[in-house]
Each structure stands twice: as structure tokens, then as C-alpha cells.
Amino acid sequence: MRLANFDQFLQQLKPLNDSGLINTLGVIATFAAVFVALLPTMWKWKKRPKLGVLLKAVEIKHVTGNQHRQPEILTTARILVKNVGGSAALNVRAVVTDLYIQTSGPLSFVWRDYGQKTLISSDKDLPAGLSFPVSLIGRYQTTDFDTGFILGELPRISIGTAAASVSVGGVTKTSRSSPPSPRMLGLDDSLPAGTYIVRFVVSANNAVPTTHLIQMQVGEAIQVRVAKWREQWAVQKADWYATKGEISTG
Image 1 (cartoon, one colour):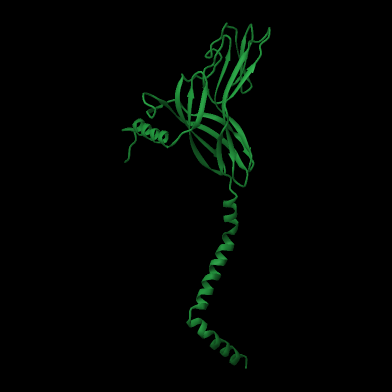
Image 2 (tube, one colour; image 1 turned 90 degrees about the vertical axis):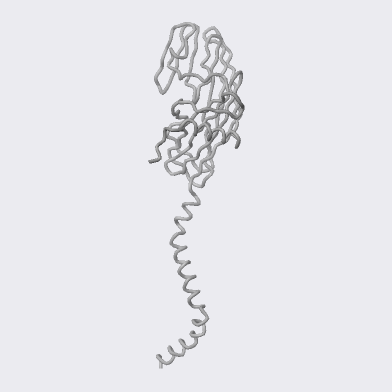
């Protein structure tokens, strides 16, 4: 009796099978099972950290002098590294990888062998939706002392009437020359006045690295903006000239 009922049930399904409906439902069920299995991975990918940058207005800070300290002017151009993703970015770092200097025309740049410059160390985590400032270039001036334009974070500098000191990473260097030179204090070489483009990479242990091109004009003041497509094309051209004949293609 049960066998007869089962045969009758199969006979009722036969038109559906012949029309392909059952095969279609089987395919849908397979895709549904795969989707459910991949759902945690897809959710993790959607909530992954994503790093972006924003330019901040150039900051100019004036410090009044006294009998022990000279008047100071600190000019800094900063960028904001922001996590626009849905989870924390671990060990965020920003490194200047290339520097280009403008030569004759407005769209004529040449690559300069400046060396990589770490803007932020690799020990900072950045929660989702938050950001922190990073110094791109700065200048420190007093009556008798001028660092010039230096890439990255300026160290803590103290220029007194009798001595000058620089604190970098907990190590303090002191010079009693009057006035001291930046080289005496162990500062990086400054950039001459001009127009530059810097390429820097922002990355994290669990985020895809992003590359950014920033144009800087330094002189009496500092002006920064994101490089437009014309400048990006000029940088690509400079890269081609810089590596022409030096890369083996096998």
C-alpha cells in the first residue's frame, strides 16, 4: 500500500520533472547552501578596514619669546589618515616612497633619490570611523635658527639663549653653538624652495595598502593639495625616465 502511494506521488512529480522545475529548485538549493557557507567570509570582507587620507589646512603656530627662549614659528602641513571601513586597522603606517621635484615647466617633474621616509610608526591601531593626524612636512623658525622644510614629523626643538636641543625618540642632542645649525642637531636635510610631489603608501596588517600623490609647494609658505590627473601623468613619465634601461624584463 505504501509502495503504491509512493509510486502515485512520483507520477504526480513527473510533469514537474519533465518541465525542469525540480532541476531548477535543486540548483537554487545548491546556490543557497553555498551562499550560507560563504556568508561569514562575505560579511568579514564587507566589514574590512579601509584606509583613506584627508588634507588638513596648514597650521602656523607662533610662540612668544622671553628672556630664556627666542620667539618661535612652527609651520606644519598635516594629513588625516582615516579608517573608513567597518573594523579596526591594526598597526597602521604611512611611508613616503618617492619624491619628485618640478624642473622647468609646470608638468615637468623628475624623480629624486631621497630614500623612504616613515611618517608614522607601525604601532598604532585605528578603530573604524576614526582618524589621526600625520605630519607631512614642517618648518621650525626662530630669530637665529631655521630647520628649513623637513619631511615628516618635526622633532621637539628648544632654542634657548645659551644652548639648543633636539629630542628624537627620547634621545636629546644639545648644541652650544650660537646659532646652531640643523646638521649639528642631527636633523634631516631640508628641501629647497620649490614644487614637489610625494608618493606615500598607507597600510596596515589587515588592510589593503593605498597609494596617494600629494603636491607640495614650499617657499615663504607651504601649500599642499592632491595631485590632479595631469600631475599623476607627469609622475608616471618621471618614473619611466628614472627606470629607463635599469629594469630587466628577462
